[in-house]
Length: 127
Image 1 (cartoon, rainbow, N blue to C red):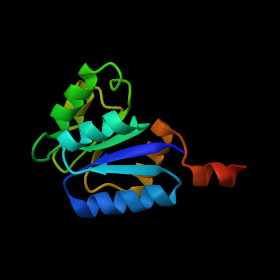
Image 2 (cartoon, rainbow, N blue to C red):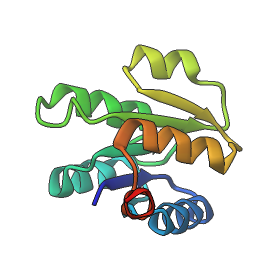
Image 3 (tube, rainbow, N blue to C red):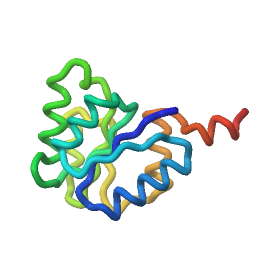
C-alpha cells in the first residue's frame, strides 16, 4: 500500500485529503506543521508528501529544504500546495509538482497517482 504524508495546518483540508486518499486505497499520515512533518517522515518514509507552503512553526519551504539535506529523505517526491503563488519557488526547491489552492480533487488524484503510483483500490479494479 502506498503511503502519502499530508502536511497542512488547515484541519479541514487535512480531513478532506485524508478521506479522499484513503478511499482511493492509500495509507495516509498527517502532520499540522513542518516540524511534525519531519518527524512523521523519519518514522514512516512515505511514497509522496503533500506539503502546504504557509504553516506555523516550520513552513513548507523550510521543511522541504531540511528534507533535501537528508540523503535518506531527499528522494521522496513532494507536491507543494499553496493559496499564494509559489510555482517558481516550488520548482527551485525541487518539488515534483505545485497545486494552487483551491485545487480540483481530480487533478490532485491524478498528480498523486503519477508520482506515487496508484492506491490499492485502483490496483484491485485493474486486476
